Image (cartoon, rainbow, N blue to C red; front, side):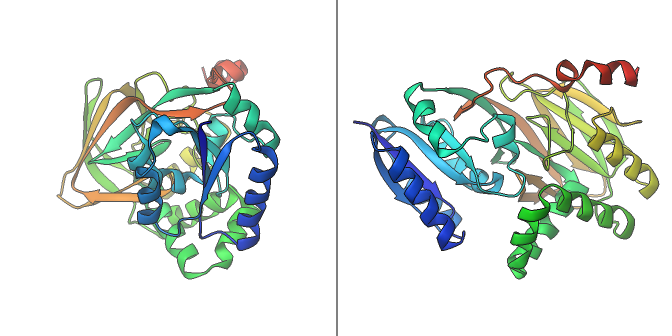
Length: 320
């Protein structure tokens, strides 16, 4: 009998961890299960690196996009299918995969081997699965994570507000801060340019933060990444772009393109802070983003994710 390895973020409340343990015992009786509650990135990766893929049916990862990001170096390319159970704030990849499932559904998913390969993106050696980039997205990520590390009630507030907390913090940044503005050179096989920008999003899926349609036509299994460049820096213009993205409309004046590689270089040599999966990944004056095709096996319930224009064709006609 193959094993199922269950990982839950050890920083969660004891009651929540115990609940997942009870659910696993109840619904995974036909599997040999192992349970781990790592409290740090190092502990998480160490317990995953020790797994022999041939011995395990899958890894059940309970947490948010940040927990997934921390696990990626230890599971990508290793034939260890991941079954994600939402446990974070926005849970963007869970939503993209249609994995808002309860424990009752888990045994069926495992038995039917309902997983597929998905692409990842890597920037300067740091992988991510959903959306990354620079500008106000990176600054928001940095500030939000600093806030919740200092003030534990922020985690409770984030769960209550969900994606709205990101919207609130974004508005605060747009009007009262300037640290997100950069002058950069962008180079790829499909686009070249120099821009003053408030944000660049490198996308492996459609939405960010629960309800921001940063790349309505993106798919995470097509071997390409989608880029969105906000080539504006005035607060009023950035606010309009932000509003368009929330409504799923093509942002006026934004630049979009598809590629397998993108290089972003600071014109003045400043180190650019880059985020991915809700985590601050690295800082460098030159950032090289590349697609990693079919690098991760993930369970999903929506075998073919429709693009936004396929789901809501009226939006396309309205934007013409």
